[in-house]
Amino acid sequence: MDADEAAYEAKSNRRYRSKHESEEARAARDARDRRLVRRLKQGDERAFQELVHTYQDRIFGLVYRMIGNRQEAEDIAQEVFISVHRGIANYRGEGRFYTWLYRIASNTCKNRIKYLKGRNFHRASDIDETPAAHTQGEAGPVVALQSVVPGPEATVVGDRLERAIQYEIAQLEPEHRLLIVLRDIQGLSYAEILRITGLQEGTLKSRLHRARLALKARLEPYIE
Amino acid sequence: MAADSKAELMTAYLDDALEADEAESFEKWLEDSPEAREEVESLQRILSIVRELPAVEAPPDFYEKVSKKLRRRRAGAETSVGLVSLPFQVLSIIVIMMIAATYLMLEIEREDAQIEKDPSAAEAQAAEAQEKADRDAAAASSGMN
Image 1: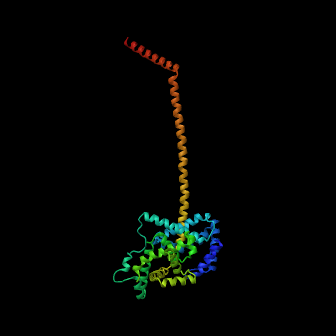
Image 2: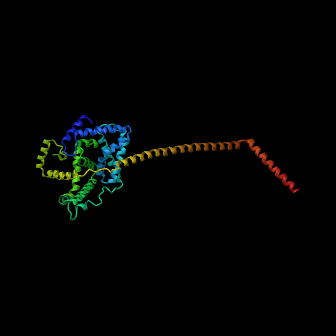
Image 3: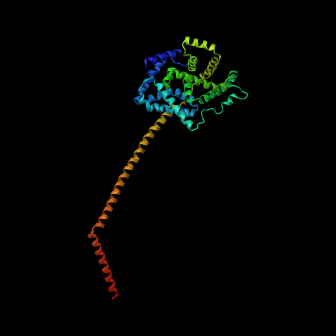
């Protein structure tokens, strides 16, 4: 990473409110990743195990939010780490390791979405009921219920809302899904997303705006 | 305000990524633009829900599955290399056998052609046939007597 980019990232990170680690924590993570990559390049299988354990939740989370199906997400996430294992020799160490990892993950996801679309994959989500069932009928909007029903029932409604949101995210255009997941769910900074997607900053912001509007249109029936 | 510029500013505003003076002037613009203000508020509502989605964890045996798949792929790659080399070996033996068979067939044909073209051999064959015929005739006449 060059000095300009580091400065931009530091500046943009200072301005973000949520889900951002401190600069010290980031530097420690980068140093740990560099060590892991070096060991992995030397054929140390234990380094691969550490790397998988370090990033499995983030990568699985990204893929699951993109695809909406646990089984499919698990398979894709496994493929991502296998690609890393195979491609580590070609990784030149430019930029941060995890942006390279995320790039592999997002490309693998997009390719799988294309493949599944071609095969008319209908299990876009683990939801076993139609989302409309959560919003219509006597119960009313999900958020309204969640806010007035205390106790375990609120948890059930919260779970339903989560599944409904997951379903609707999985209905967005793949590019929109990716940006929503990276920025709004995983909390990555603009600088990180720019490196992962290769977009220009203006394009990223306007595309993220369109993605959010598309999601808003889909989620409005669920909220008051 | 241009649509693209508005979109970019709104995104940055929602992400708290504007400098203080930029945010202030954007908020002033929102005061004069009820539609935009409503859009920002509804997006804030949606984002507050989406950002609260719980983190998803990979299955506990995730690494074991990756490792198993990796080993299977490696074994598969080695087997496929074996399978690829086997037909080459078989093919080369078949080609050698075909060349040998063709050579032998050509040799036989060449010998046959040589026999047909050799006049002394033809005469010897005719004399032998004549001799056989004479012997048969002699045997037949002695039998009649």
